[in-house]
Each structure stands twice: as structure tokens, then as C-alpha cells.
Image (tube, rainbow over all chains, first blue to last red; front, top):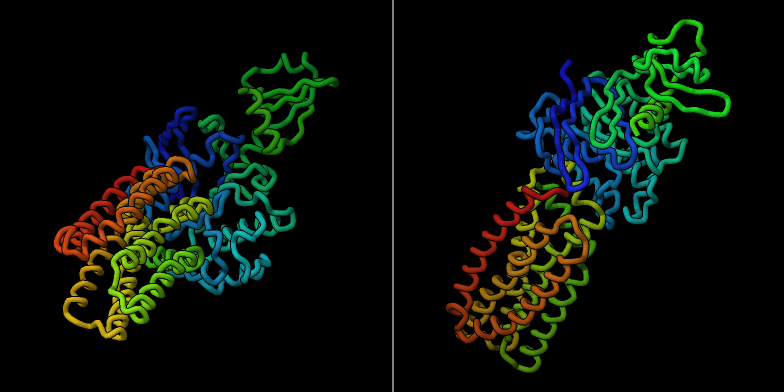
Length: 281
Length: 215
């Protein structure tokens, strides 16, 4: 199956920040989670992908089509939820529906109304009077109502309470049950990504540190609890990060670089991320 | 493109209600002046009506930036050319509607006040030519400024806007008076043609500016 997103050598330069030769692949039918601290470049990358900002270099292919040539047409098949939803403040449900109906060829009013009801969104309130959570839900409802093949979600679950976040996560999961559907999602809430994603990408200071299948990452790495002396005997290449405490050391290690019998415990994506970033810092 | 025009229509209806008060007030003045007091039609109110109506598409860009629509729209299946063009097309539609309504009001005033003769009709036509020019003026001036500073609220854009707005308001009286006297390029006709050419140039400039712009 073709890749949903292929980014090659993407460069975007600002005075004080550079997205530096980013390569990223989202295989079709999969969910890729972008993880990075604030200012790491996640949103910049997503904005370049969608043509909201101009890239300096690199090539982007979305759903097998060249984004430089066909971006507007490609967006018919892309549902987007950004940190700011971007609906005019004074609009109500009916007006939003009318605009979207004339915007997307495959706009499905019934599906949109279904999500309005499911998310408990008021139809007679102006968008500016929505809470942050309601605004995000409106963005998600719009993104899911035009038969998109790819969802691009930038901090889309921010501002949602845990119950709705769980519900939304299930909706995203359901979305990718169709093998033609893919999701690119960035979030600070790593636990959501861990639950949802097939692939994980770590971004740090404008560079992609790692782009790997989640299950492989979780299989490949583990947390080792031991003493400083035990750790010093290990192959340094097997150690990807460490944290010293009163009662010993915790280290992120590659399982195949650690002798049998040592005290290894499974790693979470959040631990993996924190250890790697701290090691670099 | 249709979605953008529908959005413009709703934005104008939702946020520009105050703009409609000015034309209504001037229509009232026009009717009272001609029908009740027997005065001749004046150019100043006609220019102001067109200018206020023409301001609407440019003025809603501020609201768009505040609500982040200017970013949201770039995630939709529209080209940057279409995003810019929707504003200019809306300005043309508004100017056309204003022309029809204002023309009707002027003719009604002439008819009711018994001033319907060739001189007054010619005078009204000159004023409408001048009005069309004034109606396109806000788009000619403000749109490129707005697209140059598209992702900012306040600051330099407001300062430039205020200066240019003052200039336009002041020039309205001069231009419309001159139009009635057969001045400002042949009783308004050449002024209108020139405005249309400038409008098209402004449209092209805005497209070029917005193509390069990061939102």
C-alpha cells in the first residue's frame, strides 16, 4: 500500500529555529505519533506539510501525490485539526455546515450532525462562546465529516477532559480500521499516543531523532534498574539514557546489549522519550 | 471557491451590521433633502454609501485573523489565489448591489420630487460612476495592505489603515463634488474606469503578496 505521507529533506528556517532536513514516512493505514517538547518543530512540520507556511527545501508527498503541485486538491482527502480550530467566532452550527458543504466535495451533513450530537455541541451558540474543549470537538467533527483518507491532528486532544479524550481516541482508532485511512497526530499527552499509534517519531530541536514502529521500540528498549558499578560494565552503545537516584540508577537500555539476569522492566513511550531527550540535553 | 464566498457572506452579515447604518442614514438624508425640501441630489452621500459598503470585505480580515480563520482556511481545499480572489469578488458583488439599490433610491427621489429631467438624470449617472470608483477604493488600498500583514492584528496594519481611511474619507468629498461638475476625468466615467484598472492591479498584487506569505 502507498505511503500516506512521505517527507524528504524538509527544511524550514527561521531566525532562531530550523527544521533541519526532516525525513518522515507514514505508511498507509497506520497512525504516526509525533512527540516532542514545546518548540521542537512538530507544528512547524505540520504547517509545512499543509502549505500553511512555505518550506525552504525538501519534498512532500501526500496520499501518493506531490504536495507542491496538487495541494489544494489533496486537501479534499485530508481532515485537519490544529491547536486553534480556525472557525470564525460569530458562526453557528448552520453557518459552519453551509460553508463546509460548499467547501468539501464529500461533505456529509448527516455525519456532521451525528458528531454534533455525539459530542453534545450546542447548535445555537456562536463558536466564540464554546469552551476550548468544545472548539476542539467541533474541529474533530469537521475533520471527520468529509470522508477524509488522512487525518492530521496537531494537539487535537488538548483541552479535552479524560472521558472525551478516551472517546475521541476510540473514534480515531475506529477511523483507521479502514486500511485506506491514516493519521498523523502530535500531542503532548504521550499516553494517548502510546495507546493509539503504530509508529512513533521523536522530534527534538527541529530534527527527527527516531522514527520507528511502536511495538519494535517497546520490544527493543527496556528500563534497567541497577547500581552505577553494574551500569559501567555494560556496553556504552546499549545505554540510551540514565537517571541516578538515592537507591541506584535507572537506565534506558537496548535489551540485546544487556546480559541475561539483569533487572529489566518494560519501558513506556513516555519514559523512552524523556530518557532520550535528557541524554541529548 | 463557493464555500469562501458563502463564508464571506456570513461574516459580513454577522459582523458588519453597523456598516449598513451609514447607507440607510444617507438614503434617509437623500429622500428628505430631495422629496421634502426640493434639493438637488448631492454627490458626497453617494460616495460615502459606496465607500462604506466597499469597506466590508477588507474589514472582516481583522476578525479572521483574531479567530484564526486565516490559518484554518489554508487547511481546506483552496488555493491561495482563490482565498484572495474571494475577497475581491465579494467587493465586486457588494459594489454591484450598492449600485442597484442606490440607483433605485436616486431615481425614486427624482421621480417623487418631480426633478426627473435629463440634466438631473445625467448628474445622477455621473454620481453613480463616481460612486463605483469610491466603492472599489477600499479594496484597492486596503486589500494589499491586509495581505501584506495578513497574520498580524493591530500594529502597523491599523496605523496604515487609519491613515489611508482618513485619506479616502477626505478625498470622497473632493472627488464627488468634482464629478458632479463634470471634472475628475469626464464626469466620473474615466475615474470609474481608472478605479477598475487599479482594482485589477490591486487584485494581482494581493495574490503575489499572499503567495509568499506564511500564515
